[in-house]
Image 1 (cartoon, rainbow, N blue to C red):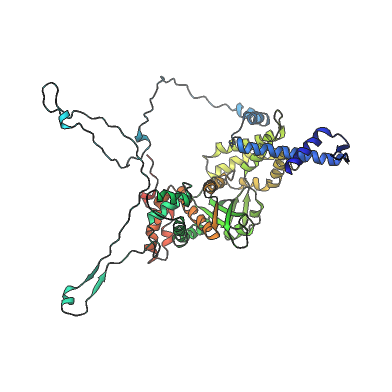
Image 2 (cartoon, rainbow, N blue to C red):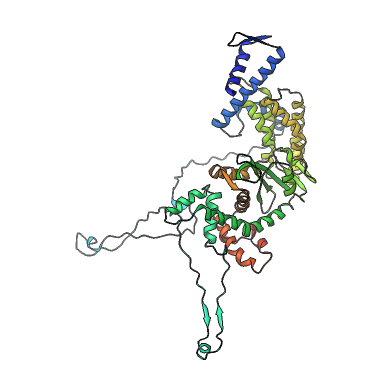
Length: 535
């Protein structure tokens, strides 16, 4: 039906003038007014734009770098600033000629491995009967050697760990037939009581799924190839128990610390949950993301699963937060109390870029190009200010970026486009979001875009392509908790496997005697062996 409707609109656009007449198969005629024709023409244009954008998203490049046309527009829009800047020429540095030389790239394996990597030496020597001198018949001695180094990988190996706890008794008391004292070696608490999961095994399964994108059914097949019958149900139960018992309390500590920050970013993405009360398997659920900004000493990245996308979810999660919240413009965030909402200029620029891409081949949209040029100018200035302190950056923004913003607003108010067209949506987004888009001028620590949140939610989106859905809401929330610890660990320079292994090894022991054990296992308290080592 959609295809037929689309073809009919194309026919209208091509053949109908003022009052149009359509002949049907049974020779009946239908007359439409000029207004109806214009409406159909606008719908036709919108469908063409959507088709072009869909093809572009599927087959085109996703880069947001400025094109030559954008730089051309920049030179036209901001030529005055360039002229003013050229009046204050800086003294050129003296040119020093250096004799040209070439450097051969070594390509050594030592360039790609850490300095402390284990080395297994395999010696190759000639048999004694072949080490006879052909001249005098004496045995030849070693006078040199040639070393060839190769990088070796081995698949995950499994072994059983037996913890033997001895019990002691008094033989003398036993011989004298008196009550025999018995001493038992204290047992270390199990990761999962009654189970056989180890910290290393649980951490490996979590990292394989949430970092490497290997679903549990693939891991089940991999272990089966080594004659280990570890079912996906068992692995799933391990992950859920670890998330509830050990990762969950650390997640709550991170949540409390997150709410004390001054700047936060947020985003959300879809997640399908098959078995959820009151919802069909085809319905949409959501994974919400909240994270610290670039000013945080110890970054925090938290995911939260929720069955919907309403305002009550961020309102509940961010209860107690007072500061700046940067998002992509979704209205659910705007109603939060004691929060200053900040918009995203990357989204504003992206909409004008989509309007550019929606233009038919061979034509140009000056309005869309100018919109992209204004946004690109802001990002160029931000690049110049990135090394400044927050106070200096705020001052520079007011001096150099605010005039660009003022000019852009005047320009946008003089432009019109069909509301449903890509250009109309870009202009509407810009005007509706303007108060939030300009709030970044309030504090030099605020970033120009919400790309930091988008980069943090991308690992989940990539992993979702592999495991596709969650089975239950409990599994979805457990995934959110594990994802949070993994991404927070990565942001703090930790190796996820080593960090999760350390947490799972320490948490059962510390929780038995220390009520504040979760705070002690935060990422910033991880030992040196958990940190990523780069040469």
